[in-house]
Image (cartoon, rainbow, N blue to C red; front, side, top):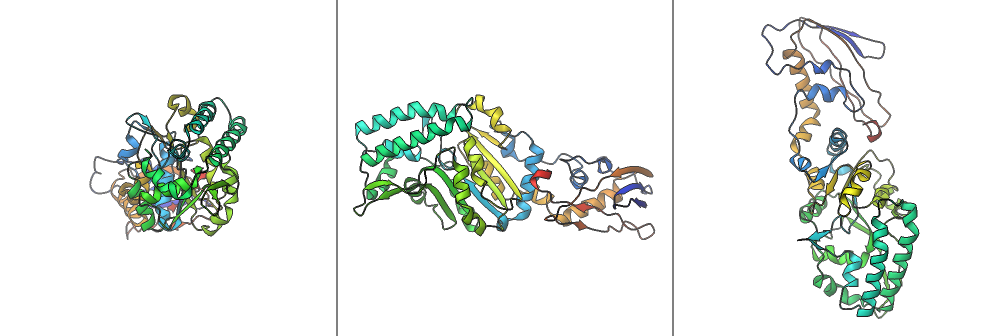
Length: 408
């Protein structure tokens, strides 16, 4: 075998001696194809045939604009491991269910709105506000900027009504137990596994923080690795609500809330890989305060107005789960599926490359140009000299690239 390199270290031609035996039927010469921006040279070398797909991503309720990109991001997440991962998630209709047997499940606000602590008059006022503002929140024809003032108005009015009701703090556990709130299937495994591996979980909710914390506490998953940022009630010395703490958080100002959480994210500077979960366009900005993001996978849950919102959401969230009531998409990543572990295992990759070059190539001369993609400073270069024969020239260089999301 003779190898020619150009000035940049790119392979420009290969001359190979025919092996003594014919190659196996699954011959692949695609390792000499020019690479594209979304298919690295190494990826094309390794994937000589269609690898098995993740069955969870093959379901008709899961949609992806660019499956190859999703695959590459997941490879980056798995290669980084638990020590580099953090979860940023919404709560209402993301961790909690949207509906059970066709019946809508309550949000954190709804848990209070429908409880016995609220008078019938107060309940009717809150219901009228919902009928007025919820259609605006989910209207796909309005921009977030157009919805913003309506959301502020809705939250301010509803919180004022709750203060008028003089809610008592010690009654909240009973209110949550009597509610119909439900968490998505797989939530125990999801939270327990993240806690087991000490993966930080940032729950960013426009709901009621006191109710949210009570829900996950009663579910047995409020672990030490969880931080909740939400609208928390302010109680007086007798335990009666007197207002709300801090800045208002609604579905379309999470960008501002994320920036206010910069100090939290700075403590997690090494956790540069993110899985983001949400159910609205406003949830896309929840990671805005995170520095040094390396890989981010955004998983969206389409619960309502599915057909009208799907095309818009697919351009921003990948993958998108239609009317799913479980956390399968997130679970399969946190449990490190074998096909992707195998792909991200460098020794196995190099072994495959050696076998592919030594056994599968039959032709005496192959002339091609294989570009080597540029590395940026934060990426690592792996080179291996493969000795294919003691009688022939002994090396060919491949580069393993770990690319940022913007390069995928």
